[in-house]
Image 1 (cartoon, rainbow, N blue to C red):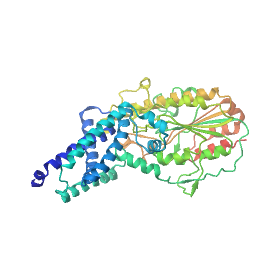
Image 2: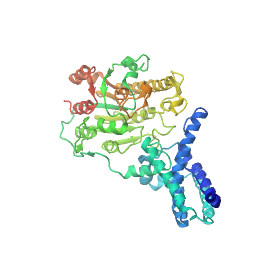
Image 3: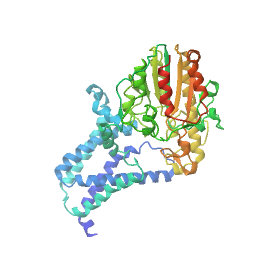
Image 4: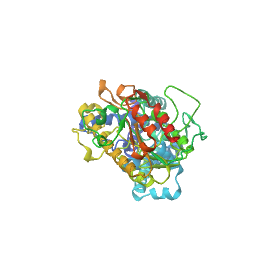
Length: 488
């Protein structure tokens, strides 16, 4: 107690400094989080306190020397504020994709981002920073340094303990996501791609393949697969071939997409992998990636083997609560479709990724009540399933729109849809994905073929239809596509 009395002003300085950090930086990570009721708010308030406690440990060491606080803390504070402004105002997610945009943007584009509200926010941050610098100059920061250093180290240790128990619970928040975004940007991918074009048979006839990469869609919640709810009314009117028994052990995007998009077979490792886009390019296809997800280092290098990359709403990830709906990709598809003799077009969806209520427009809210909070323990299983099934209704509409465009295409066209993995919706108390639960390992997979495709490539059409009821793995995605690109 005597130590606290002697250092009352020093403690007050750190308390108010951390409150300012919450207001200008860390609070931005929670500003757009949907919550329902006092319990939800309390849970996330505790989360914020834990986050800020870990930051307080680092901040303490930055205050031990006056020059370090003036230069080091000031630079970091303003640097993080420049990110938090966009997190507050636009719900942008700090990922390696955003870091790449910041580091590689041209001066003219950067100038366009400098607005009066942005400058005003930084001005207020600078005013507050000046206040703390003047206050810091009057303090004796060496009092109780041993005890406070141990306390600060304990706060820092809390970060690693929390991350060990629940990965990304703090790393995905400001300011940590800036550090990890930079690390992700500079780190090399975990696997090596073979950049040499393989020797394949060039496609002589015209052919278009539209490859729709879904997100978090389990096969058993599609009406077309016998689900009790009519979640696919549009697809039921089409000649869809569904593969209801597909298996993948990869139940999160960072593992599933590299396997889906390369010749990487389940359970088999090798030094180099070949991208499906490299195969398509070698076969004479114009490759285009249209994505509504930010690129991650796990699959970004694979995407970069496309001829053209079009990312819509690219600075908002699944952590954003104002992410654009997948329909924003349709105008991009309109601009690209039919512009080359042989085309391989990929549409990468946000699909049914949590938070479900952000994945579809209000007009598709057929099943109610729906989720109203991000805090899953406060929700009922019925609400979770209702919201999830509404995302499937929107998927049904989205695929209908893609197929309608494929019907108008003048060349033989094949539409392939596959989700990266499934999702748990309360089975055995489990929710979301990234575990080995059965429902997470059974992603949806669908095919649609134009009449001209069936006529010109009859054997392939029959082969796809014949295998629909077989128990297959996602290895078939690369195998099927590679075979289709070299059809004679």
